Amino acid sequence: MSTSAQPTQPTPPAANGTAALEVRGVTKSFGVLNVLRGIDLTLRQGEVLGLVGDNGAGKSTLVKILSGFHQPDGGEILVGGDRVSFSSVESARSQGIETVYQDLALIPQLPVYQNLFLGHEITTLGPIRLLNKREMRKLARQYLDDINVHVPSVDADAELLSGGQRQAIAVARSVRAARKILLLDEPLAAMGARESRLIIDLVKDLATSGRVSIIVIDHNYAHLFELCDRLNVMQGGRITINQQVNETSLEELTELMVSSYRRQIEEVQNAGA
Amino acid sequence: MASPPGQQRDSEGVSVGRRVVRAFLYQRELTPIVITVLLFVYFTIKAGSTFTGTLSLSSAAGYAGPIGAIAVGEVMLLVLAEIDLSAGQVFLFSPWMMYWMHNDGLPLIVAILIALLACCAVGAINGLITVRLNVPSFVTTLATNFILYGIVLVYSNDAEASPIPLSGQTSFISQLMGSWKWAEILWVVAITIVLTIVLNRTRFGVRVIATGGNLTGAAEAGVPIRRVKVWCFVLCSFVAGLVGIVDAVKYGSLDPGNFGVDYILYAVGACVIGGTALTGGRGTVVGALIGAILIGVLEDGLTLTGVSTNQFFIWVGVVIIIAMALNVQFDRIIARSRSR
Image 1 (cartoon, each protein chain N blue to C red):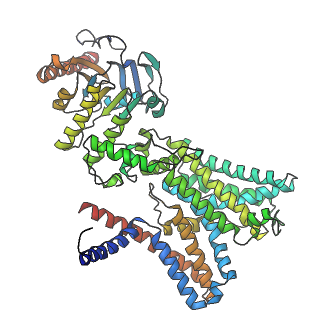
Image 2 (image 1 turned 120 degrees about the vertical axis):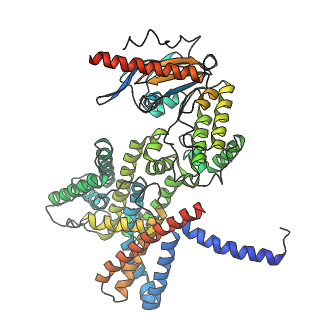
Image 3 (image 1 turned 180 degrees about the horizontal axis):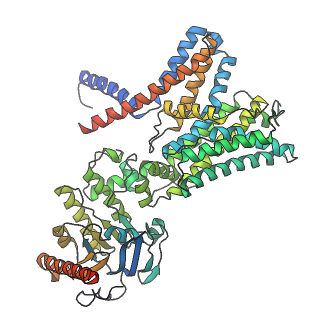
């Protein structure tokens, strides 16, 4: 673990009470590529935490570890104070963690309502459990109405939808299913203004309800400042900056990031010299 | 509701026409059904009661049965964007297994169960090699096909086997297991119904479509993609093995020289004719059965109308190409109507 970056960087603060999620020293390599070099991160109860950083900083890898898709090489993860290890997406999900991925986990050939219930299908009772399509259609219609997502029909295959509509369904699915923690990996990528607004409102509503804690990755600082309570900056597989949104500004954050980069470059040069 | 009668008729006229077009676009089984019916009418006109007689129809069913049995299981794999080339050989291997076990003195029911278990094991091996060792299923199952063929040749000493247990008896169980001339095709119809429900009405079916439609997406949504694939290989082998026993009871003897690839190619053809693309995410079990029946009617009809049976192969090829081309064109039309 690097100590050279520590003095000037605020370490993640200790949680008041039990944190919804705590990550301690998590590392992950793919072959020779050390993508995560010791991640420390705390997500408080009911908080929205923004994760920013360049492409390749390891944000998506971190999210895939927290969602059980990848397994970490080292470090530990605590959910609600209990140490957990996720062997699969299913096991993370059983802990109440839902994820919306960058690459949209919709199935083009399945209708909207089946996509909305993918992994949470409603089945009929009895020994042979058949899909309760009528109930799923009804609930899907209701829910999409409630959150103002408009689709031609819940029976339309997902491939018939626009990119924005697809994104909205993917987010809606996880927002609906999330019990403790929601992970959003660039939920606003490739979305129009109206659709972005919709997703932001959806996430804000969920955050206000306080039942779910949220981590969101995005490149748009305006969105992040609106959505998040706190921002963490990832650089080179570490979290280098940790700022409360109401105690900082975009200018200050940018300045911190630039100086952090400068320091990293100097480190590399010193190491080389 | 309050609109004048004339207007109502007009709008109905339009919507009926549109509805027919839509039905053909979205229900891919309809086109092969229409073609089968047309073939049926054509052969009836050409050959009359010779074609519509029981003997002729049961021989059409005899052609369609094995192809259908293998095709309906194969659809599950095609939906996954996988393929099982060994299913035809499993169809042939299963009754040999039953025969050997029974000859070794095991009770018939036990012999059948062991044969079916062996088929499931072949499916599981196909699946596990494919998902664990990342060998393309085309290659995995091509290899299993040869291995099973070799096993049959070696252990049969290259000699035909007969009599087959149950075969040619009048007991209910014998009739059910294949001696009755309609038993095999009815087994296939029953399996088609079950697999249709599995694919379209169960959580497992959703997982199959999801895995075939968007592998990464399905995995991220928590679908156990590997397990789903392995189970589909098992299912396909099981169905082929089950009907393979029925087929052997029906004919009463086993020929070790029969090669499974002959069967599997017809079966994949039947899937394509029925409207299943090989791209994954979509497929119809009913369509596969109809494709098999179409091939059966074609073979039977051409034989009866005195056309050289060798022409049959030309027609099968033509039908497969037409079916696939239609499917692709239908997809295009849907895509275009979408973008409008």
